[in-house]
Amino acid sequence: MPLENTAPHGGALNEHVERVDWVDYAKGLCIILVVMMHVTLIYGNHVHREGWLHQVVHFAQPFRMPDFFLISGLFLSRTIHGPWREYFDRKVLHFAYFYVLWLAIQLSIVEVQLLVSEPVAFAGMFARALIEPINTLWFVHMLAVFYLVTRLVRSLPVLLVLGAAAVLHTAFAAGIIHTGWLVLDQFSNRYVFFFSGYAAAPWIFAMARRVAEWPRRSLAVLALWAVINGAMAMSDLHLRPGFSLVMGFAGAAAIVSIGSLLAQRGWARPLRYAGVNSIVVYLTFFFPKGVLSQIMMRTVPEWDVSAVCLFITVVAVITPLVFHRLIRDTWLRFLYVRPAAFRLVAARPQRVTGKFSPTPLPSIR
Image (cartoon, rainbow, N blue to C red):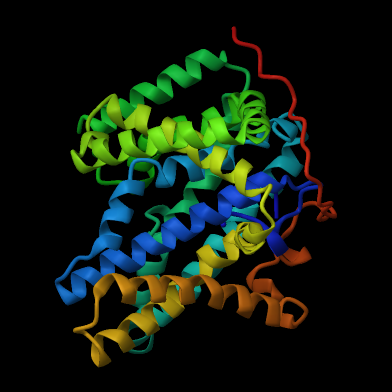
């Protein structure tokens, strides 16, 4: 949602040298699940009804964000040992730019009356949002934090960091860590998945290759996982300590596998396009989602809630992609491409490839 082939950034925002096809398919699936969740829960709450799509959202809850963060760490080994200036620019300043820019856009739309009537109060709200991320932008904010922290702990033993991150996640799931500050709470809850993507990248890529080599066996395993995940999700076991960690990793592995399988299917290419430009969708979908939801609630509130939510989801994913394609060669490209004035180092060209060989697993000391 500049940088590497990681979730959710991609497309015009990608500054890295290579892309890996199955990663983009996985990211495309991830961003659709995220948009579907926001649409379904909010619209269903407004019309006071639920449908079968709510069950799909609930099914994906154990792994929807863990897989996003795990994929985000996959390529970090290529840059984490580079110069601080370059790393800070492409991993921290990059996300800070898009967070501040889209925070200003979203607040100006949602709080337009406050902006006009009480600009000082609006400025205070904006300032608070810099340290307490709001709306869907929290993910962009957290990625900057995760990249910075991972750089700082890179010399520590991998198992030590993984163990500490797992303890933090378990403490959050147990209700021990609930500070009310989203940054600290979400760091505790999600960092284990991000760091695992970085630390276990060679194994993850090896698994993706195995899945591609054994598609039928992989489909059988995925079917078994779907049944188990569905049963456990319906029982809310993913909310319990221990189960949340296991289900998060199992679901992330499933998304990686599905991405690897879809990469072999030509009909799934639109999904890859959404994955390549997933940050475009992530930053922009709130606008078509909000407008279309209001229209549907006021005109056809009695229609099937799942059909309506599915329709809104499709439009909310496609509209940002169309908008990006229309403005990418205009002065408005600053919405998705960081201008040179906001860079510490020059952008690097991107090459599209189907293979990637990550550096070996960091030494476990």
